[in-house]
Length: 348
Image (cartoon, rainbow, N blue to C red):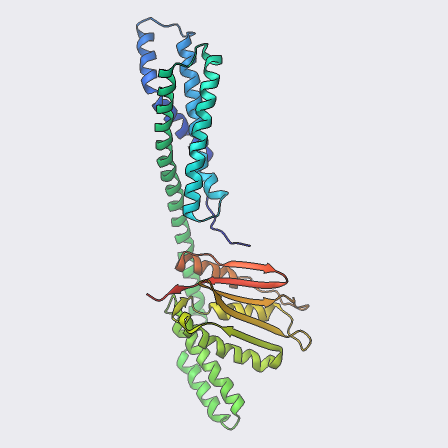
């Protein structure tokens, strides 16, 4: 399953208006010619020239509508490939539409107007449709850009509102970090003789310090994130012992690459929360790198007594990747395995 960027379509009413206007503009020389004939009294409104003009105008308008729909909506709503592949397919499709329309126009022309298609008419039509195609291509880009900018503004406003709500929630739940650290230090001195308990408190203290510090950073190195994750895994292993195992296989050359803070911890926590952890079914979470991405995988064994969650964890992580890296998470559920692929970005 691939999580794709959602595009808002350009309204059909706007495309129709642009199509009719462009058809009129491309027909303008013929419109002036017809007007001069009519004003001089040399043409009847039922004449062949009016039929010829109407035929051309309808074809220009229909051609414009199809090309605009393709280049503003269909190419983005129906195709999720890379930009370069999409552009190549789009250009080839536009050329195909142009050739098909020219063939249909020339085939129907004698039936509608009662005149054969002369070489001059054929050449003029080829020129008009080619020019119109180029104009439509650029107008499509403008229309698509306008919609994307509008959506970007709306998304920024939504994010501002969300940030304000998060800041308010943080203020409501704010506590003095020094008080907590001092309390943890006091607890360590009380249980100094109990090495497992002391180590547990030290790991908890390291986790809390990392969470506070990462709040000021959009990205952290993989080395920092893994160090924090090992502290978190120690707490989980203390609870579940040999029923939980975290296996990390990442080369040293990847440790300077960056991820959003708490990204790995969130995925491991998600696995712990949603899967059975027992002596008969221990939970194994594997983290490894492949082809410039980080993978977090675990077997799917749903808990029978799963508590209802907020379902905001993965959604939050997806949003952070979209905003910070302009990339998408890839989530797969194949062969009873839950897998999340995290793109990596190297430290500048």
